[in-house]
Length: 370
Image (cartoon, rainbow, N blue to C red):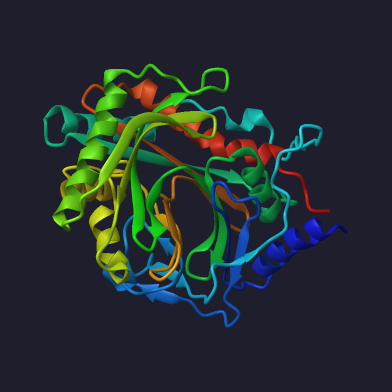
């Protein structure tokens, strides 16, 4: 067995032992980092402000509840580099058909259509400017499914995204690939992004033409972040909007760069930012309640945020977008899309289908750890 396969097997063994861990790859880094909680204990948090001064790997849900807390895997280190080759080798065969592609072809469900009409009615009544409608897709888990192999496949395929795999007793196993920073930086240099609007890549290249619906959707998010930062007295410099890669898709992105007077209060900033209109809607609090009451399922940790938090060092926290919840016999995939009053049912369904492909592709391409 090669050293690389030993490292991958180590991850699967942690899951088998039910030992809390997180392995993650930050965009631009060659190797993932692995951190573990040897005692098996993690910290449970029920208010984002309680993250002030904390250090560790954060798994935060869309909606914090007693049954779905913020979980902090505490560690003194950002994680040890894990020598797993994640560069794509064009000659390597990655197409073991663990999941037939046909099983992923789905028509618009009646449940989604019903939710869509509820959401669109509220938008056309001008109750909201924007709402995000999401859905889940549950499929059976292959007997030889290896979380670590799927993690490696995600690292290879999605070089521009933050890739993670984590387990705690409270959250279960989650794996994801996300392009959206909620908070990143260190010392006196920090940034967040406004990411919204969706188009497929054109022959692998970023599209340059964007319609009014996509531009307006992204502008709502950018305006919100600008206001939220100013509410804390934070003045930022901006770059964008510009098209950015997200797997086989592209989003419009605006970067916000700023400094902080006190890095110990990152929890306060996260509480103001989360959830952004990219995963929730506007007005924020009203949209948040509307989604909880009308979306028809529990998002759990989908559309929350995840990553390494360190007020005295480097922080990299990302919105948990393209992700899956891995259970004993099934996988649940998640995707959503922003709705405006001009949105059409079939267009929005197809957008969620394309976003679900981010996880589907790595299920098809992941090799086994034999």
